[in-house]
Amino acid sequence: MSASPERPVRVRFAPSPTGYLHIGGARTALFNWLFARKHGGTFILRVEDTDQKRYVPDSEQDIKDNLRWLGLTWDEGPDVGGAHGPYHQSQRSDLYRQWADWLVEHGYAYRCNCTAERLEDLRKQQEASKQTPGYDRHCRDLHLGAEIGEHVVRFQMPLDGETTINDLIRGPISFRNADLQDLVLLKSDGLPTYHLANVVDDHFMEISHILRADEWIATAPLHAQLYAAFGWEMPQIAHLPVILSPSGKGKLSKRDQAFQDGTMKVLVQVREYRRAGYLPEAVVNWLTNIGWAFGDDREIFPVAESIPRFDLANVNPAGGKLPFEKLEWLNGQYMQMLSVEDLAARVRPFFEQAGLAVDDDRLRRLVPLIRERIKTLPDAVEMAGFVFLETVTLEDPKQLVQKGMDAAGTVAALRAAHETLAGLAAFSAAAQEPPMRQLCEALGLKPGQLFGAVRVAVTAQQVSPPLFETMEIIGQATCLTRIRAAADRLEQLYG
Image (cartoon, rainbow, N blue to C red; front, side, top):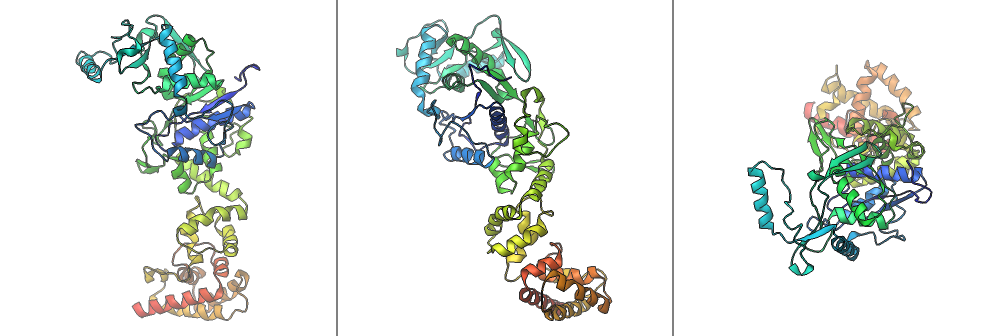
């Protein structure tokens, strides 16, 4: 599975900056990275930026930022350099033209000056006669010279025999050459298509293995024929299984935004996972399990443990559903494994984005109370943002009234709780709980009734971290102010 000693393992992830890093692209990058690390090889980032019509200016930075966020650092490429650069295809145009000309000169390619109008008419005729659409090789035997004006360069595919690709995951795949097209290698603007550029670059960057999406299987015979024409050794190749939507109804969308799949909102871009508060460790663990299994029935494993086990022989060629629900569970598990300081540092930006002034001491004390209750980092804000507010606003004061109580009884209970808590010399959770339980007995209330009313008064929500520990963090003065304000408001409305 690895390259020979004469050909060290060198793999590449070669995104096109026409959009933000897709979760499927991230899985492809991950498998390449794992393969390189497993074999002590080199992981290369190459930017295939020749499609200027669809170029998105900030997408390259997004791709690099999110690869780094996932921990998929590259050994050669933009921002890193290397002996096989440049690593942007737009800076390698002369090389592509040189080898396109070589193919023409040696009879493996030809110049084609068919106009867009002719090609459109041809397409319509083929549709009308129910023929397979494609170029009719009109210019193949015309031997047009470079002086013909605007033209493209097409590969001259053999017309008989078969081309067989030995896929490392799927085994041999054979194609009838007569069914294949004379595809364009060099466009009329002088820029290469993917087919020419990736073959030339993979050769000169000494790529040993190509791990790419299965959508490229149909182009593999052309690439194999190009390698044969050049007389170059073709890298070993593996086409990774497609990622299906969670419902299994088709390939995962490459839309720019999250999309709805039945009742589930599916995130498409890596940056959406980042913004949604998923940990990169959890996302990597999750992606590694899509199409490959760690073994030993383990679902949670650090990336360092997956490296020595990673083997293309264990990649399932069949497409797999995106197990979106599993990611939430994994994320929760990984958050529980983080140290208090680490988790505090990761949730802090989400509190600050919500406009909350966070102090480190209270945040560190809060984290142990919420770490087992949250699934994503923003959940911390929803669950405990009230800790960092000066005052809280209760939208519906009726929420103060617990089951089996009325408004007047709730006001009385809150004022009694205020008096009890105000009389405490210490405000630790341990100091609060005994007298509050005694108050329940004195008032003839169940703990859930009194504590529920106090919880809503202090937090403005019906669910929160443990009450007394939370109140200790908020502080005695602030808690008393909130309880008094809640009792006054309830009394004004319903008293």
